[in-house]
Amino acid sequence: MLKGLNAVVTGGSRGIGREIALKLAQNGANIFIPDIVISENTEQTLSDCRALGVQAEAMVCDVSSFEAVKEFCDRMAKEFGGVDILVNNAGITRDGLLGRMSEENFDAVIATNLKGAFNFCRNLYRNFLGRKSGRIINISSVVGLNGNIGQVNYSAAKAGLIGLTKSVAKELAARNVTCNAIAPGFIQTAMTDALTPEVRAQYEASIPLGRLGIPEDIANLALFLCSPSASYITGEVIRCDGGLAM
Ligand code: NAP
Image (cartoon, rainbow, N blue to C red):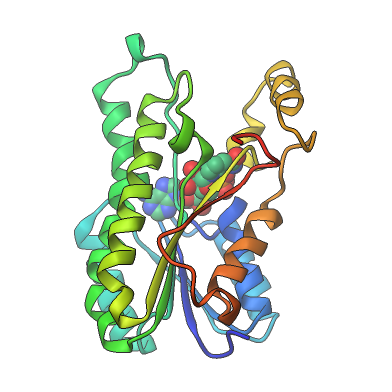
């Protein structure tokens, strides 16, 4: 379905990003991972993608740095023929109650989760205009819709990503480029492994479907949004949360 298309998946070496990379690779897309450090996880994801018969490369790139992202996007154009699919997935948390949240932790979360997506959309703007087609998927969160105690920084970044998604969708629609956001609920990854068993049990009890999600739940939705079946969907925010935020 995606044979020969080039997909950039930020934060694609582990967690949700890794699963999205594998799902797109299973469907024929070449995978490119901008990663803050090339780790064993990165190498593993690349070799798992290559085993599916596609090209897979990683390049060191801090998504929060406009210059580093520009360099990455320039290399994509020169060495690999540009980008068809962009998944802005890289994210961090620096949780804390408002009364104790440092300026540094607020700025760091905005820089990676929100500005990182701007950096890619901005530096791939001409790429997408020229291609007259393309898919952009931003990984937001249900806390961007509803807010959350201890996550003023993260929920602001994820809500900002929804505004960014709708504006990019409006600006690029005339060029046949869609831009959508996925709002995951609680998904089992390193990010949620940090929860204590008590907190985890509380979360599970609050999810109508009665369980945390798995990265593949998000990857299946990302694949759908990249597929021809989703060609008339843009500017949308789709929750994938077991009913948590309804
Ligand atoms: P994760 O397991 O912590 O993985 C995050 C990925 O982002 C890692 O590959 C990490 O690279 C990369 N990354 C972080 N900062 C970066 C930077 N400055 N430049 C480049 N790469 C960077 O997270 P996850 O749980 O899979 O979450 C993926 C996305 O889904 C995030 O945007 C998160 O906010 C969102 N989300 C997650 C949940 C959940 O329950 N897990 C719920 C809602 C939304 P390293 O491996 O080098 O650290």
